[in-house]
Length: 306
Image 1: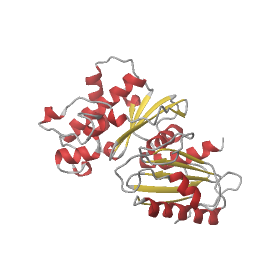
Image 2: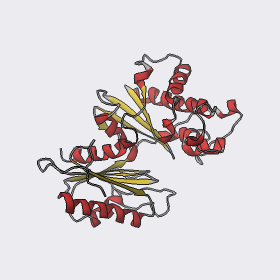
Image 3: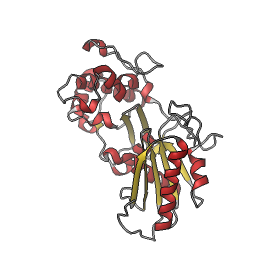
Image 4: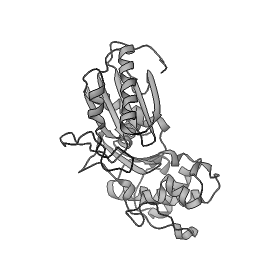
């Protein structure tokens, strides 16, 4: 672990965890956008993975002093309601060993000090990070979506996350079947005939074209089809929630030129029904890029102290 700067004892030390399905990122900071120390490792089976998390924070406590609070943004589905008996746990998931595993309790049991812990989804953490330090600044109503292994989304109103019975699952909103226009028939969701995640996630790109998205050239027709699906998903969010801006993150969204294609498709599909800001403002990419999740997790920790 590498120390980047000395701590200022006048400010509380925050801990953050971005628990992704593929990688875990742990950090400590006084200012969420400037981690003092950070480490990442692969997401393995739960006991092994949490042992690495606990070791990071116990070492950090020895080096830098007590952590005041901890924020966790996790892959889902997850039980994020504090009054629920299963709060802090992963719900049913295909990831081996993680179903009903309590991340929060395991960390409480392992860390050397008692501290308040905030627990939410990784996409909600990223939404907070972008709202406070990135593309969502100066907006009251923010939608953040991420396209990667799955498709997820988070919503903020005046800085506060919106929750219902559980966290939003926008990956499973219906979208039209645009595959047939390209002579394809690909949907990787086992539950729905044509949903956002089944059509626009990273696995759907690989299944459809036989190659991971990052290996497809920028002029490949895959990105024209991808833009259609992302635009359709954004139209669904616009109709249902009417945000001031939609921030499109995740590894799949990083393809150069894709956001411009999405804006063009959004205009074509929406029929100019809504009086929206310029699409350069309304449909954005994350300013924090891949750091949004860990920055947001540290912001969650800071919010616990307020």
